[in-house]
Length: 338
Image 1 (tube, rainbow, N blue to C red):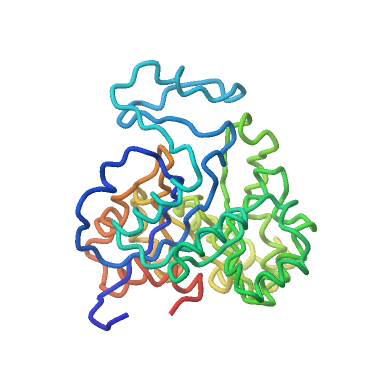
Image 2 (tube, rainbow, N blue to C red):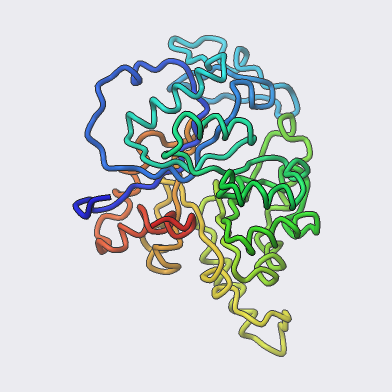
């Protein structure tokens, strides 16, 4: 890129392709380039229960999470419903159109391998391929190694073991963690997930405990781990508390050889949501180069397309280099971009 670019905006934009969009036909605006650090390549019917309509501006409503999701019941009357597209081709077309509109120059794109391949074929220079699947469907470490060697996978994730009832400390993950560390492939980990038992009946919130990452970080000192869709404000008190006990040797001997905050700085990045008021303070506390951020589009509680400006507003008064690192440097470091 030319040196005239002041910074690169980096967004977590999960595009599934809802129909509606008059915006796809609008004239494109002049926007800074965006590196989308987390985009989903999924089939049109890729979510549990299949595609679902939305009602923009309406309250989400209440429903029994043990029952099947029924948008027609939650939104019995909706003046302007948005319906999902019906075909994989249309999902891809609208995703690429949205990337064009918002000047997304590169997207870390994860999903089932066959769909990631389709996205790369359609836009080979703009797709950084990732593999997002159930832990049991990752394939053998040998097959995964071959995919990485062929540059078919550059990111391991998004992976959410807790959604499947699997602890991040479970030995079943060990061969994949060792491979990611060896080949310098970042691990995108979905933490703090509180999903509907209808959609994910095996999900266990207790398995999102950050303490369960201890073994992973000790065993794999060179592994890059990004905590996605987890919020970021919680990280400071957790690190402070763990450091306090680490330093109290003889009374709270944990057996650790490295302070938890040093493990975080060595291995980890964390994603903030644009509404978190602590981001400017914590950028200076944990380091702006360790911060990622998200729109979480098209989730109902996401922040698309306003997330970049929301993040900038949260950083008013911060030094320019801090702003640059939060907006771009963190994600570029996590994905090994230059």
